[in-house]
Length: 162
Image (tube, rainbow, N blue to C red; front, side, top):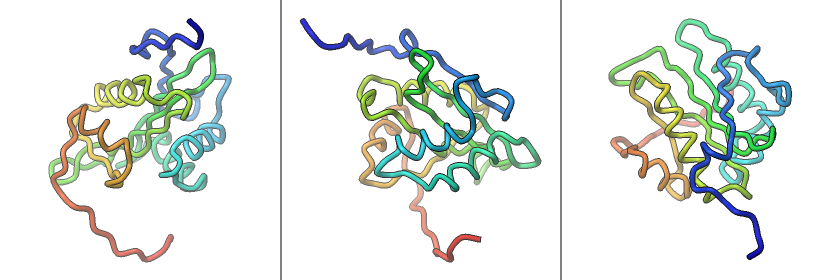
């Protein structure tokens, strides 16, 4: 038999790096590398590198109504997936947390890394969590499997960036 053996339990084959502030990055990764990783691995649903950077700076620099955390799944010191959670400083009508980004290396998709990251992140969130996902994004099925439901339609008035 040829090919690589794939475990269905990423917790047995991957390290989990938890980053809550700028000083928590492992030696093999920095803020810019994480921005580029997420930008590349979320394709075709990616955000721009500057938008990803602003979100990470919000998550990793705690302040009133700010903060959050990042989890990175790594294999052999190389990131294979990442998730970003933001704190809203709210509760009730606006959940306490937003699952903002999930990115998994395309070569690693289908091996449970995204689901593992989502479950690990949810375990670290003491309150409700919301997310935005496009209807045609295949990750929508993952979010539904872990328990997310659709309660509202999001509506926006696009006015450009500030």
